[in-house]
Amino acid sequence: ASSCCAHHLLHFLLFTSVTMKALIGVAAVVLLGCASALQQPDATHQFPTRRSILSIPPKAVIAAAAGASSATIISTPSTANAAKPNGLILDKSSESGLKWADAKQGTGQPLKPGMVASIDYSMASTVGRQPQIYTTKDKGVPYRWTLGDGSTIAGIELAILGSTGDDNSIPPMLPGGIRRVIIPANLGYQSILNEKDPKCIEGKDIGPIPPKNNSDGGYQRWYQFYCNPRIPYQPDIVLDIKLYGKR
Image (cartoon, rainbow, N blue to C red):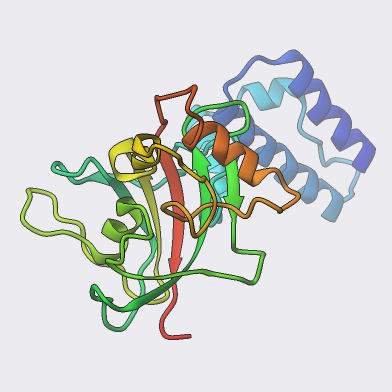
């Protein structure tokens, strides 16, 4: 019975042209039908056929697609969707150009300049065949610095401290919160290219910078996008930030 179910699904995937969103929905419908058939293996129960699949109302397909993806919570920008909101509506601060959306609201009091911030982050670029750059979330070593000391790109500090005074103010993050930001070049690493002799190493230039000795290639990808003197244009940075409280 399970092989029959797999056959119908494979037949549909090979011989039907649909969009990716519809494809997810149809696959969900087919698998639900298969599961029902396996639970009720009587002689009259029919597995989904290609004809029955094609007769599914579009609204049902879209609903199934939404259900299949609704459990996704952003924590790392995926390679395919690094610059996309993944279901989140990104607001924009008209003065800074920073785009942002909260995946999780934190609690407690916001941080102030002069206080130590501790974050895990996942970094990606908005261009390139492999936009994913680096993440700290599985390294066990969060990124830490003193807010306002000049060691960290302005886009991250703006995302954490928030802003007021323009027509779309950014609220400050609270400890435990997770926020996605898309940072334009002027709030990112653009200042590095204005240096006479940039070092492009954590602690020597504005951070965060992936560790150079890491074997995952994150440093090389970061360097290619944001510290390469032969490429003066810097693409926007996509960051998922998790803010910690006192640690």
